Length: 117
Image (cartoon, rainbow, N blue to C red):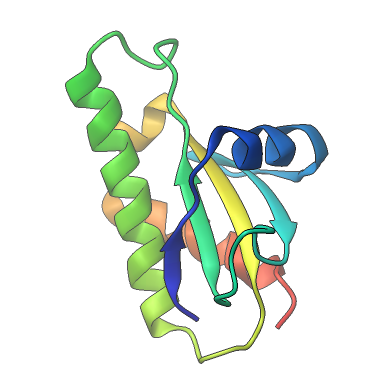
């Protein structure tokens, strides 16, 4: 499964309104099955959402986003290839900045184990 970028206001708003919610220890994920309507590729479409409520510093919010995205990238690289698609909108929690990186990978692994193959 390849890791692709989820972008666009309408796509993200639709996912916020109609998507399922999974709450992990260090991140909250809104997700739905299938690719966005405009995409023909199959894979895992991932977008990041970090508001200023997490931290006023843009540097720290960006670090939270990068750490969560990298955790998903490493976990997806270890997974067997599948033909399914999903859209994810990941909202890191403030604990994702200071926690150990394997804990972030564990959250990503637990979420991806719930997705059907």
